[in-house]
Image (cartoon, rainbow, N blue to C red; front, side, top):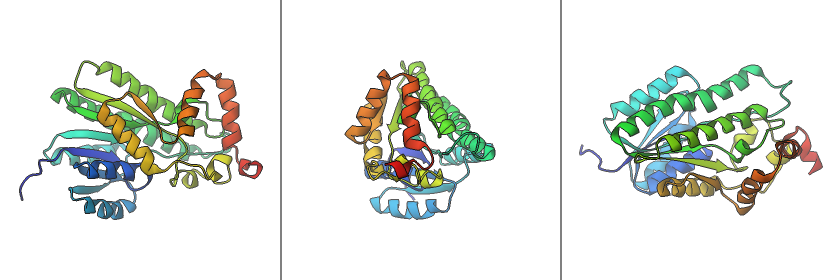
Length: 267
């Protein structure tokens, strides 16, 4: 079989939601894709993506575990091809009062959202810096800009990702490796169900953004080499912009109104 001459992209958390749509953006823009997720849905997701005509490979690993990250990177290396782009998108949410939420679930959240992002980014950044080329998209969130009352650990994890992305962008500014932070607002995915937040105002809202729109804007920003993009709707962009000027105490109170369990009844 003749080797592909298309650029290769790696997308984590690619079985559904924003990750699946990011993988689709790469595929429709003539990239081969390694699509990574820990659930069975990745197989069906890849079957759907293959209709775009590029080579799509499914890799099922649990990135919340160190050996999952190692297996992911070994798989990438085994392909014998350089990564042109990487979307570090894998992540989970958790809602509820901190005193009541499950410790193990929140430690797993930290392992996936923070630890695995650092672990995989270390390999990716070293590889791209050595070659002096590549693009990396970190999926942060507008949650990174505000204290997350009743979503405390999740928002803190996204603040971590945001800070990491912007720091690496500065470190690599004199290279041909670009770093972009994707900052979605509330998006129509499985996030709120998995985070047990369907009874919250934000979880029950009908005005969530489309994951396809978020991914498209994220992909465009990555290709442009932008520092960050708040995606996707105008209301989300305004929320991201307005948060810069509000005291943290005000933002924490606003977040409580959106994320406190049972708040959907008041909307």
